[in-house]
Length: 120
Ligand SMILES: [Zn+2]
Ligand SMILES: [Zn+2]
Image (cartoon, rainbow, N blue to C red):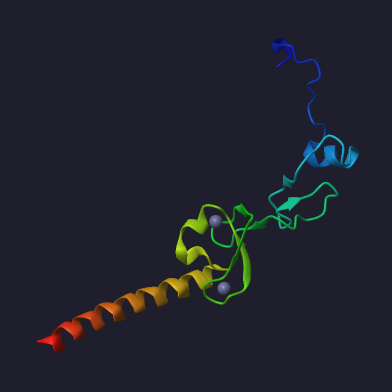
């Protein structure tokens, strides 16, 4: 990068967290993923209130949902929100939600067959 004319290139000594500690609220915008139980920290090194670990894949996520199974508030990642049964607060809820859906699907199919039979 020096060769391309950048004169102010520093290694972040001690890593990004150290960098924030030394320069609070100055040269750093946004939140920083730390990939531990805090998930992300804001500029005061407080655990992020926006990002939580997705209960399904473990990636940080910021999509607020209401669990389709138990109706608890939950946060999942942008990838998992695409799948209906992953709009749930935990792997457990996802499992039960999907199983219920399969059972319902089977019942509907059986109901349909029943209607046809009775029609004859
Ligand atoms: Zn996910
Ligand atoms: Zn749930």
